[in-house]
Image (cartoon, rainbow, N blue to C red):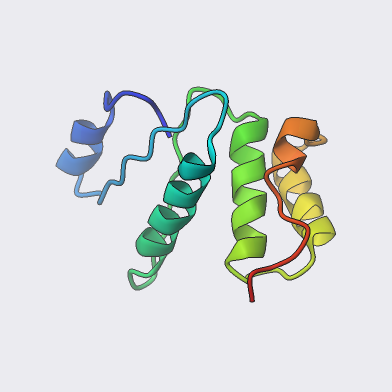
Length: 107
């Protein structure tokens, strides 16, 4: 999610597959689509674990991950997705982050 690739070579040297999806501010619809598509690709690998890297764990990160839970069908309730993300973050998600969680699932 970083705009530059400063950590990609270190991750690759460690044998970690990398996907670069820079997410700007303000976040654009294309950013969201690319992030969800890339996360789908990363998670499609057997027994995948994904590290999401951004300068700070902000409402954009929380909102995108909550949005992914809903759009991917992992959760069909956006309120539950919000609750899960807030539990992980240990704080409430603000309006900008909440706006990234769709009201209904794609499934």
